Length: 194
Image (cartoon, rainbow, N blue to C red):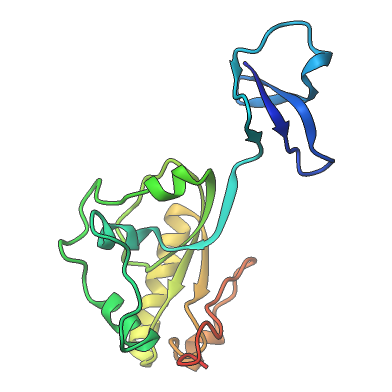
């Protein structure tokens, strides 16, 4: 398939005005000037920028089941701490297969997500490339141990990485034992957290 657009943004080199991208199967085989090709495009995107899919480097897809079809949850008068406590309550209605909503990510060109999941989150099938971070939670040692064990099991069965949610939300003894080749952690996101 030959795609053309007013601008093609290859990222690794300067933008190409009146550019083209040729895709064969699931591979990009050409990125360059449309004028260098001898055939007409299969799809001319017109006055648009064609660029690689975007990456959401930290999201929680599991929370999409909480917010749709209502507007996204927002910080209310109580601030960040109150909002986090609210997020710890089970969703209403509860999670259900197909209850996850990805429209806002798809509409913004996201193709890959680093999804941070509670280890007890139901399996999520997504239209994205997905890297999973199983977030260990539990300020109390017994809760942290249980979360850690479940995160390890999910990582072994579904892939992904075991990571602490944050320094303040994981018991110190468990925090010291979490080791994965890739880590992600919530850190100083608000003055409440600080």
